Image 1 (cartoon, rainbow, N blue to C red):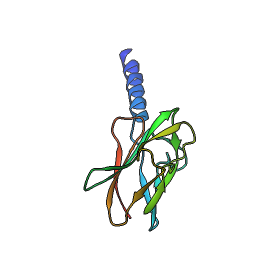
Image 2: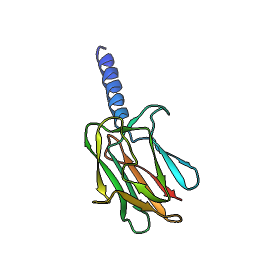
Image 3: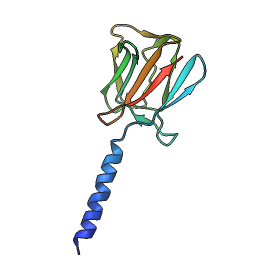
Image 4: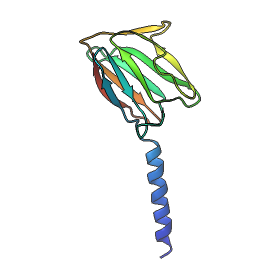
Length: 134
């Protein structure tokens, strides 16, 4: 049966391709007044992050959104604080982000006691998501 090695190679290639398109691992480190959002691969390598969105969970309003503009932006982590945050919270090793929201502003505000939804996309169509509250 010469088909068996071909099928095995095809299956291995398919599994490798699927592995390349998995969602970023998302871990929050809450320190009280701020949260460090970890997206590192294997705990130490930057991860390709093409889109970041923070929205108010109750209203659905997008508070902050970054979208990959050029290159392949890769980040380790970023910090979100209760109060004012710079639109440049994610500093990619490679590539650049475009600020979608807030439009025309240099900061965005996150309030204590408000529940937010954090969504992060890598190379896939679906996002890694978690709740965020200060």
